[in-house]
Image (tube, rainbow, N blue to C red; front, side, top):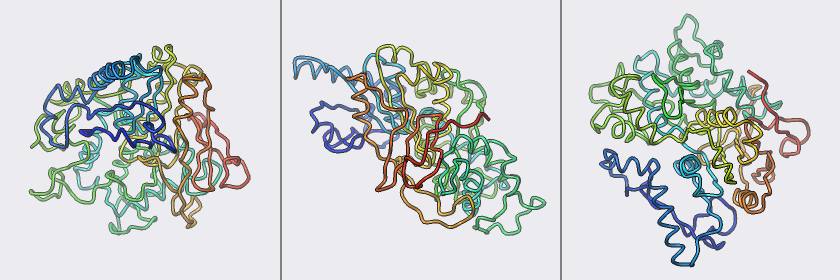
Length: 447
């Protein structure tokens, strides 16, 4: 929820080498209109709108005045770099304040902010019946099934799901879990934490909900009708998608059981329900909070796929997401990528945007191969390539009209891979599996 001004002196995480300030840039940023983690601000409409979009314009305009006074002129070029919430802000300025920035770097943007805050509660609501609870014991079986069905879709069984779109299509269907179904829908060993553990019908229904699009009762901002939820991933912990215990309001939970909480819970009890004492699991899709849901979506969600005016002014944007992200929603991010292409056309999008995807990378855009490959063999894990210098790509594109390639090489030690722009993914051709030259950016087959 922000509340902290970013480190404007040492901030260099979007580039390698010297920080932006050390390179001679004037830098500015915002706490988004409130300070710290106190929750009362979440009941203020002004504070909510500041977080959503207003602080971006206020901060920009004040910074331009200060630069004019300090240097006698405004900057020739202005850039926005942001990560996570800042990534959403980068999309927001491209959609709302398109004349303010020449170039944007947006990493792991939380595109559908209003739904992302609510999504963990929606999963826990799905699990209200005890039979629907996916317990931590099932984690290895779930991840193993993802790898078993998807690892080789990129031509190589290496514990990495590079063909993320084909995998997502597979697990968008309940039938994908058929081989894991418990005989007669009875789990003989609920504590079984192995890859061979079975799943009940209720658990399969929950998993299908988690890994397929969630339909809204009414369309939200920009006509969006669904939330993409999560892509099949190998996150070893489950990171909030799997609950370790029963919560208040769920079948089998104690009266004094803890209430559901997550990183964005203020958005549920504050923005949406406007009652910090409310149980988030009392939310009902299409119920008494639906009008409020539509309203905050209009403020918070950076889902407008029409960036025509931003592109027409010469604006450029580089987005990067990871499919193993269990904090943001890769499903929503991928759906936004597709919405851009559907609205503007592939050629137009390619002329001003790069929609990069790092398969099996988390919210920090780092990741590793899974401990087992698609053939069931135990393999050593190593970091996946994820490092590339975004800033020179953007500067050259904006200031020198030199467009970056549709794929760039990312590295991790001696290992390299092509970083492909959506909808392409790294397809193994032949040669040393540690080298980018052994792969090509291929488009997935039509579903």
